Image 1 (cartoon, rainbow, N blue to C red):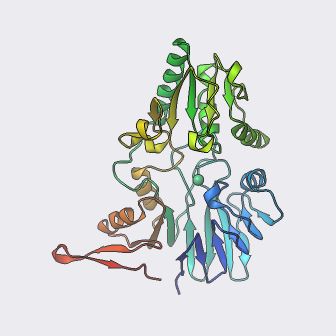
Image 2: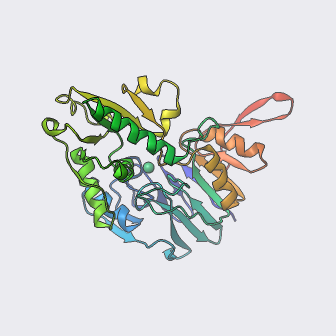
Length: 336
Ligand SMILES: [Zn+2]
């Protein structure tokens, strides 16, 4: 017997009747973390305490919550048990391990191996089957050291302030904003946060996280502050009353050529809450799986990369280009 894994708007495990990160309402779903593309109005969920709290802040409503502590194994169904492990992506983000007669299965959710300032340090366990995110699954995505990127962000902000303009950092409201806010502590400059970012930062504080001084964004009082707000497509018009500004996007996609033009900002810094390509490979080496399924981003390319290294790997829900002799390639559906 082996695990049956299906991908259709989330990951479905038919042998135990649970979804993993279903983006549409489901009867029973394990939620790896509270980013909007991983949550929905499910009837019953399993997740970490911070994820449950962040979900309540972002997606109010009634549901049955089973809150698990990291590292503690609990029954999931009569035939299976579940353990959550820190994923290092945002506060409370979890890798989900399920144990049954089919063996052990590890679903990474979004993850980051490099220790950050605001997420629990990633701790992946060995597993028979690995379902992993591959957002940055191409070799060109190798991030520079985080300390160097953060030093660059601080220098950017200090130069803007010295030039008499307000530095504005575009960061997603959950996770990246809190990471950047903490990283800015050495700059000693007061920070203003977009209201949505501020609300989620307060949730982090409920879990004991401490931040440098911050307040709510007020354009008329922004001089001398650093402003953190979501990318413009998530907060249109918010900067209308802040003409004297210099903007930067903080994202792993900053490594793409033309990132500054695409995000319509003055600078781009590659600080990510995901694993880069070298760390995706490192994860596979740590977990030592018999089979890998890839999801998100460059899933097909990364699965092909793993196969060249002798590891059985398939992109979930995609057509996999199989490498055949004589340079022939052939499309093949994912085996179940
Ligand atoms: Zn995420």
